Image 1 (cartoon, rainbow, N blue to C red):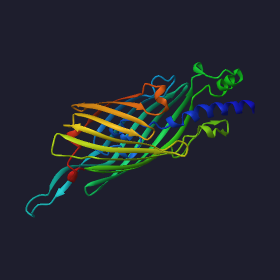
Image 2 (image 1 turned 180 degrees about the vertical axis):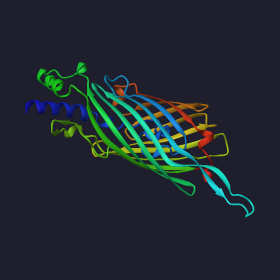
Image 3 (image 1 turned 135 degrees about the vertical axis):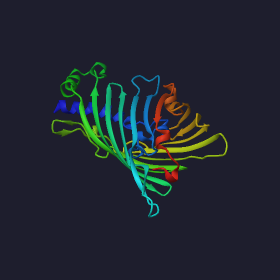
Image 4 (image 1 turned 90 degrees about the vertical axis):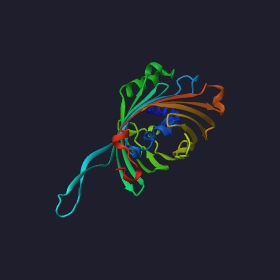
Length: 327
């Protein structure tokens, strides 16, 4: 019993401190909203590959580090429509493209101190055309690997360390699922999603460690694409997340985009952080950088947070069409 209590105490301390990092809130969320909403997979018709690396709270030892790799695409197939002519002529078969299915995948690594979480995700999305809009539904299956690095153990109690080695000497695998909806038009989009629907937890023998439970987290997002008659356009957006344990956190952002090739942006986060962003596009390759500066008590201990993003998008000619005849 003493050893089990010690194990529970360890997991409570480590995972309790990580509850805010359980679902990272990316500063450049508007560049890859698929990270938190599975319904986005394939919604814009592109085949996209994204890499994101986030280094949080520089200057604080063992601060969170998050890396993600995502892939998403629209499954299009070639079909034929029958065009009926006059009686004396043959019917013509006109080729067309259609496809309502989006697929996606992700590998996400999140490390804080001695604790590491590695996750793999697979997403299925279904897109429904509604006049000049699109409604999308998405479901993701997750599998997380949870590990603890004993060489960086912070506890000095030999009995507690022995318990850790005996009980957590191999990775734990935890499954879960995400669900999302996404409404997209030419000028704006709205999304809602829920992460960790099953609220899975680590099991030691037949006992569930409640403190390790992956919290069910809710996201809401939106963006407006203002298209003026000049070379500049503006894109205000927001994302908000909350669960039963962590505080409500939201980003309010605005990007200024020049000729679709360069952009700068500014975000305000409700946790008293200000975020500056800049980026550029070269052909079908996108680069982005964000710097978070804390205005709260952390400002005395950290140099800020850095986030780097790179994306490659394929299929601009073959898969993107005007809204009226898009798919």
